[in-house]
Length: 251
Ligand code: BT5
Image 1 (cartoon, rainbow, N blue to C red):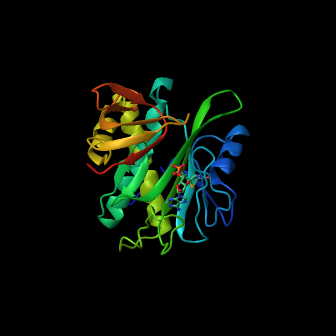
Image 2: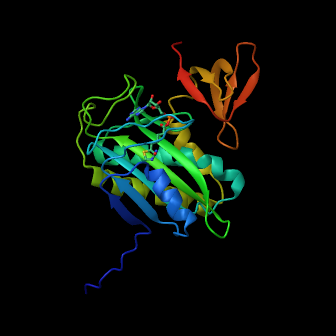
Image 3: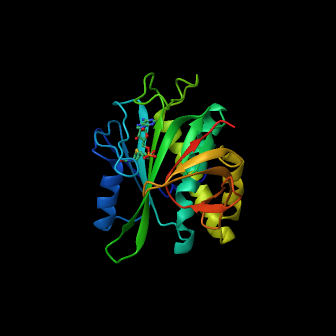
């Protein structure tokens, strides 16, 4: 008895041949009242944004460039875990499709052998009623043979093949499952465990470059309850790092 299955997917994918920044398009849609579930994908992003006004660069047709709008459905105090959750979802999707096991560099860079495979930019945007939604921006290097910076890599350079469409499908499924488990548990416990398992930062000696210009050096020991990195300096003093860039140092 074959019964037609209604489309259960919570996602509505909108594909644009070209877009300045998918995060910007998604944020504008949210401000106009678009409900969660919108996913903006583009083949050619012309003004991709990183954190702190940095640029995310991809030539046309070679990468996954998307922004998914979600209502996280978790207390505000747990929002800082969102970018970490997207990093884990991205690792899981790549592993499912290619067998490669990427790691996460704190907070949410996805790395293959210490090189950046994917970047994530999560932004909080208010819907017209004042309810906050999250725009999850993700860029994954898929087919590139040349990259804008020497610290980057792509799936093609790692010797595996997949399509942008397959990767998007797996990524959205993993994001949905991760958020569902998080809400069902009522906290980020399972997410923390997955993140720690994927982390290539914890246990390492690192230099943290803070947004205000300060620098801290020490051992990356653990995450606190908000997903912030706790470093122990050479004098044994702990420091909590909530934002910034981490450089892995040789031991
Ligand atoms: C990020 O910033 O890694 C977040 C990137 C998010 C991009 C997605 S694409 C879809 C959505 N729409 C947007 O406009 N953005 C999001 P950050 O950690 O600040 O890293 C930026 C730095 O990564 C740059 O300064 C370069 O050094 C490097 N970079 C630029 N393009 C890269 C690439 N394709 N692959 C690897 N590294 C890159």
